[in-house]
Structures are given as C-alpha cells and as structure tokens.
Amino acid sequence: MSDFLSNFSGDDYKEKLPKSKREKEVKPKVTKEVLEEPKKRKKKRRKEEPSSNDTSQKINAPIFDDPELLNVDDTPKKSTKKVEPSEDGYVSDDLHEVEIDPEYEKKQRNKKILIGVSSLAVVIIGYTTYYQMTRVKMPDFVDKSVTDVRKWATDNRMELDLKEAYSLKVESSNIIKQVVNPGKKVKKGSTLNFTVSEGADPEEIISLPDFKTMSEKEVNEFVEKNKAENLSVITEYSDKVEKGKFTRLEFGNKEVTADNYRRRDNLNVYFSKGVEIFEKNIPVPDFIGKTKAEVDEWAKKSGVLIAYEDVDSDKVEEGKIIGQSVEKNQKVAKNDKLTIKVSIGKAIVVPYFGDYTAETSTTAVEGLDVRVQQVFSDSVPYGQLISQSIESGTKLTGKDQKSVKVVYSYGQPYIKSYFGQLEGDLPKLIYDDFNSKGASITYDVYYVDSDAEKGQIVKMSVYNQYIASNSYLTFGISNGRFASQPGKTPEKGPETEAENVFSK
Image (cartoon, rainbow, N blue to C red):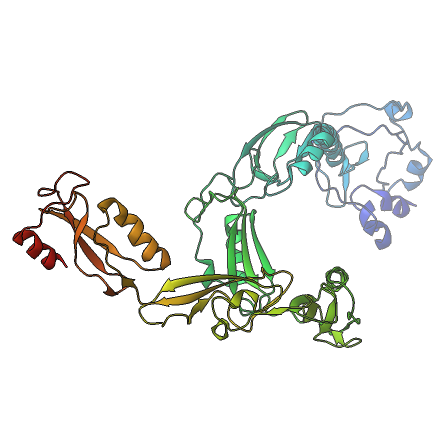
C-alpha cells in the first residue's frame, strides 16, 4: 500500500502520469502577477510518505490531519504573489495548482483597440458622408457650352458669375476660363467665376490674301483659321474658267475693300464648277405660226435659251414665228440655245440712188421717204450721187424708220462778178451762192479811194471762174472819196477811166 501511495507524491506525480496525459497540458506564454480565477477548491488529502516500520499504523491514521484543510472556503481570493509557471503550464504553490489563460491580456488589449478604431471609423465615416453631401467635384468646362455650366450649377445649387470676352480659339458661348480647377471639391451654394467666349472680335481688320492664287480648300482653311464667318466660298458654273479656279470676288458693301475688310463684313469668293452639262431630255414643240410670248413662256419653264432673228415676209404677218433652228419633237438640254425666226412683215428694200436723179429719186420706192440735198463737190461732177444715208439693199421693216437722205453734187463752185454790189450784201451772197450748198467759202474786205459810191464793191480777188469749195476771197470796197453826191454821175477823167480798167 505504501508503494501505491508513493506514486502520488508531489515530486514524482507528474512523472508517474501517462505520456498521453502529460502532452495534453498547456504551456503558458506570458505569466506575471495574476489574479486567481474564481474556482472551487477541491479538498485534498495530505500526501504523506508511508514508513516501512509501521505501515499498518499509518494506514489506520486519518489522511487529513490538518484542521485548516477541513474547512475550505469556496470564495475566490485575490493573490498578489508572483509565481512563475512551470514548463508544463501550471503554476503551483504549497496548497494549489492554478491554470493560467495566456490570451487574457491580449484579448483585453485587442478589445480596447477595436473599440477605439470603431469609434474613429464612425467619426470619419460621418464626416466623410457630410463632406460628400455638401461638396461636389468641379468638372472641366473649358471649351464646353455655357448651357452645360448653367445646368450643372442648377443641379448643384451653385451661383454663377459670368464674364464675356472675345476669343479667336474658343467658339462663341463656350467657356474660355474657369477659376476653380477641374477635379477640385467645391461646396454647394458657392459662387463660381467663368469667362465665356463671344467668339472672334467682329471689328478686327483681317488682311485678305490674294484669292486668285488660292484653291477652294485653302480659302476654307483661311476662313476657319481667322473665324471669318461672313466670308462665304461659293461655286458657280463657268464656260470660261477651269473647274476649281477662282472666278470673282464680291463684297457686300461697296465701301469695303481688301484693305479695310473687317470680320463683320460680308464677302463672297467664287470658284468655278466648270461647264454645266445637262441631259438632252427636253422635247421642242412646233412654234411655227405662234407668237413670241408663247415661246418665252416655254423657254422660262424649260430653261432653254432663246435667240430671236427678225425675218421679213410677204406672207406671214408681223410678230408670228416663221422658223426655228431645232425641229419639233427633237430634244435639247437645259441652257441649250434655240434660234427662233420672227416675221417682221413686208420689207422695203432701199435702192441705189445713183440710178436716179435728184428730181426722180423722191418717187423711186413706194412707202420710202427720200430727202434730197445738193451740195458743191470738187471731185463729183454735177448731178451725180455723193451719198445716201442707208446702204442700198437694206430691208426696212415695221420697226425701222422708212426714211433715207440722198445727196447729189452741184459740181465745183463758180463765182460770178459782184461789182457794184454793196458791202452789206456780201454775207448773203456768199451764203446763198456757196456755203448753203455745202461749200466753205471765207472772205475779207479792204477799202480803197474811188469815185464809186461809198460801200460799193470795186475790186474782187477772183470772179467769173470756178473756185475750190473752201476758197478764201478778198473784196475791195470804195470809200467814196472821189464820188459825187448820190444820184449824180461824176465826170470821168483819165485817172478814173484807167482805174476802172484796172479794177476790171
């Protein structure tokens, strides 16, 4: 028996345990000053070493002979004793064996950290939620429409302060500049500043290039670069200018030139589309016997060009169609040319008046008014035709004046003697005899001593002979120095007779 009890001694008890039980014991990681866990203490018997001499006596003795061991208080007590755990995880003293939870302090510390972190997270989440609800991210509105800005501001309860400025790069009504940078958080209800483009400055003077040397594409690029919205590139058909080439320039205002052209001024630059080609799908009607008004109406609807040619006719009345260049039912294209012959009635043919005299020419052709004139001519003999106002063979119709002027020759001028005529009669004599008949005679007078009555012509440079139609004549006029009273004939002396002979 003593051998059996010896197995439960403190020194070799654990050594006597089976190996499987010893492996189940937990080793503590950290153990310092600990509080005893409230546990119910178990009553233990004092372990005594049995004596080999009186084994039987000790067996009969009571196991618990310590009175303190008999009255065990189940109330947990604190202990401030520092104990060190054994290698197999137990803390022992003289009376107890205490099992330590190595995770307790760690759990308490983790619990406090978790509470702190949770509280901080709640505060952060609350502030973040409030921040997100009261602020909005600023978009990039540069080069965007001001309409987009107004919509965004309304949706986010923002106030706008808009300023306008000219810009060559940014389209009209688009944003040039924003004070708040894109991506920045803006508090709702704030006032935001934006600069809005008014487009290019309309009063700016633009230096125009030489459009004659440019292509249509290059002009369009010039318009885009300079924002010249009032400069239009127009193409038109041309029979003379090659396709794609410049044709003409047209300013909207006569006062505007290439030197003072502003962006607000209207300007059209024309380029050729080449010759317009149309399909021949327009049938030509029969116009014979119809009027010009009917032809014009058809031409206006079809787009065919009409050229009228007047033709006299003895059979078709004036104003009616008597011929057409394209036969009926044949087809023509738009802008094709069609020649229409229109009757102008019966025509009067102007004759050659050289076959007539000045007297017979007036009745040469019935219905023709002939006006005859005779003039002096140094080259055309008397009575022959000098000219006629309308060429012979010309047909005069209802739209023409049926009147012709015919000029016949008086031949070369011939001057007669004007002796004895008065000086005052000379202008009438020269005009009636010469200048009224196409000549251009000029003259002059001088005065001489004579017994002829004062003012009489007593000398002539030429007389009783043919002269040129542009001759210059002189006349000697008596000053009446030797003349007697009017009505009396002076006696002729030798000198007077000689003078008369000389004057003749």
